[in-house]
Length: 487
Length: 113
Image (tube, rainbow over all chains, first blue to last red; front, side):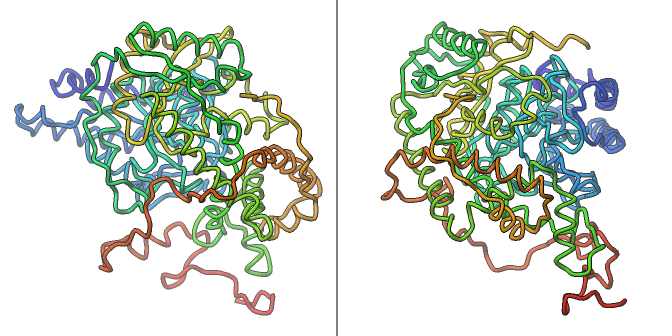
């Protein structure tokens, strides 16, 4: 059922919000030990909210029901980077194992004001550091189609919770692909909006010039509905855009005949797994069937994007993570003799290897003697990446690309080689460096039976175009009809 | 798009000595093994970035953020914020009088309480 269909049933009083919420909470319990999608389940809170919302419906005039938000009574999950007042928020790290925020992220407030019901916080790589959710201090999350395979990352729990239908939709974050990749690994839709489209306030920071908040949903229309609530200026986020918010559902269902879709030469010629290549070629055919014009484009900077991304993001992360010092919140070790010992002991014990690795690299890139060679150079590369995308997007409306060079892999496969894992982010990170929007769409399944998606990319604030094209694509591929085996 | 192979450039070596220095800057304590491993991993990644030298980048202006926004200020007006008790609610050790408690930073010695 789509959000719109569910919303109609809620407003017609065919579906009781309390029963709906209870059903979802029961599903979470049934699937938690097998898939580990959630870190915290806020069951009492969700039931309380459901009761309030159902009561409110009872007291409303029937004629006013239609003015309710389509998210009213809809259960959702949020990646554990989103602060949720009174509900434990761990960031996926043991450093924040006991942290209970006293305020919520702006986006959480917004969704709750519209009547959406938070079921719980989903598992993720700590601070967003990872592409498989294997770096989480709360165990890894299994792929919805085979729990021996990774759920992707860093929003792995979010994507799996939607695919397993243990939430109707989920809030994720995408700094280097962390919405698009896990969505494509779980046969669901992932939208990374333009940087600045949705508020970063109250979301645990990874890289402040790259972090982008977006929805993971089963259907493209659902993503458009959630984006309608997420998009918009927030004075509490200094890089929040004042760009006008449109109704992202408005153009859905329109013909996309004649739309120009760019295929980057570098991606077509590159080394990718044959299942991924088949999925990519399948997606091109689907768009051709829809009347799109396929055009070759060139993304000359694609080879340098990973370097730029990891230098910029780890540098910003090393600065953002300086706040974890054992003083105001988080893990604290007070056994030392000096103030400095509190910092060192708390951080050393609170941060795992992946966190230390990125903090050290970021520290290096910003340190005296290396700043120009790495950080400043990466900022220049960013300028070139932006120009590169702008140049390609002059020729086409949308760029079509793979999301990851391989299908979802087995848990533990990259364990001994974290840097190889970083290099595999090549298809996703360049979009973050550019800052534009990207929508990942279910496309195919691998030989091993795990999902493979593709992504469509557009110019700044072209989310409506991407959603329109994605909607048409989804109705051709019909992959939303496929769900994980055990229900 | 090479995921598993890449041309090997002159290896950038991030030495153990550098790692120790970085750890000090980042307020981290590392074991001998960790120093060796991080040295190897950072070297591996930074060797990959040597690719950046392939292109001429001298005259390019750096982009700090993609929005083009500069110096976004707000009115200097007091607004509602969270209360003091909420602000210290997650303090790892008990607070006193609404303050965070820390070790006394004095002559590198912990004073008696």
